Amino acid sequence: MLLVWHYQLIDQYLEFLRSIDRRAVYWPRSSIDHLDYTYEWWISFSSSQSGLVWVMRFPQYSEIIYRE
Image (tube, rainbow, N blue to C red; front, top):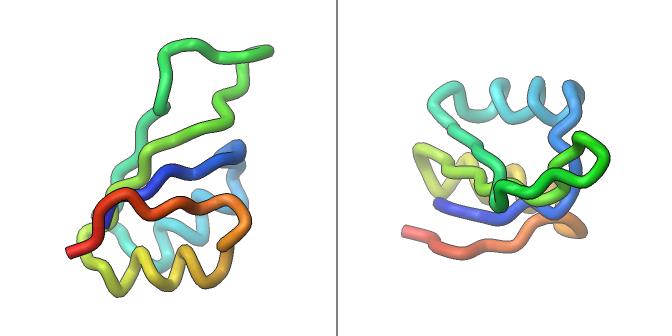
C-alpha cells in the first residue's frame, strides 16, 4: 500500500510506523522543505493490512494512493 501522509513524521508517528510494519519505507513527497520540516511524505507499507491500521489510526492525515 502506498499513501501520502499530510503532516510531519515526528518520532511518535515513526515509532508507531515501525511497530506495525518494520519493512515500511517513507520519503519526502517534494524536495522543498518549509522551515526545515517536510509536511508531506510518501509511505509505502509492505502489506495493505499494515497500511489500513495506519489509516484507521490517522485518517485525517492519510490519503491512500495505491492499495493491493
